[in-house]
Length: 331
Image 1 (cartoon, rainbow, N blue to C red):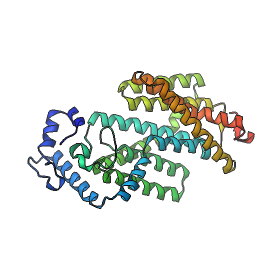
Image 2: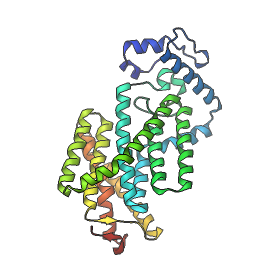
Image 3: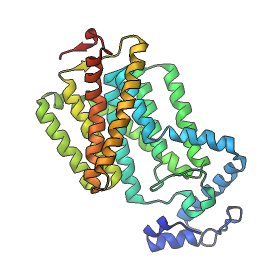
Image 4: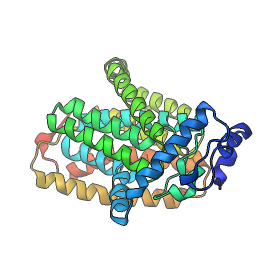
């Protein structure tokens, strides 16, 4: 049985898929051989083989790994980078990740490829929304961990990046949430975005340096709003809002830049305090904006969140004495 979401696909695509699979994965039969349906067929057969090892312990393990590709995890990760490790690195990784997420969501929207459990619901071992290709988890993990390893230039980070990228990608296949080609597509797209980002960072930085903070913020807001309206869906509102907030934080940082060279006890206090307030801000905005149209619901919520993490929180930490005076310098 095919899920309701596949009703969005074209009639020809549905017929191709429906004519190709029986209901039981062990009895997948080719009735009408075409290149596209043959690709889907062998991948579903592979997922069925992989899931033969499935058990509650492995299910939980791979679900935890998949959580490392979700919004809450990345909010924690970026907060940790900004407040505890390296502010400059946090900006670079966050912006490349947000751009990657925007590209991923819109490729998915254009292609509208089903997930494995859309074709065979029994393959579903965890929850997922939206379309399948390319895998957002595979793409995001590639972008995040390779970018971190690239800038920090530590062998252990490269090793960790390689392991996490592979195992997170495999988890999506194991859980029946992505085809192997979805994961491969996510990896390839992520690598392309990383190299594009590395090439563009310096020229863009030189251009933006010529703008006043007010001009920079205004330009950032206009560009992010345009990005949303190119495809006005919820995911794009969240990404565009966060990007606008982070870019506003960059302009603010032009006057107040915070580094993280102090003892770990201060960093832990900053992270704990910041995460609690971040949660309060997120839940408050959600409560106040729930029910508004997509743009008014999500763009302001994530704009405030991005601005808080990059500018508001460091200012509060300085006020509370969680950042020493030597760690704050006017530029």
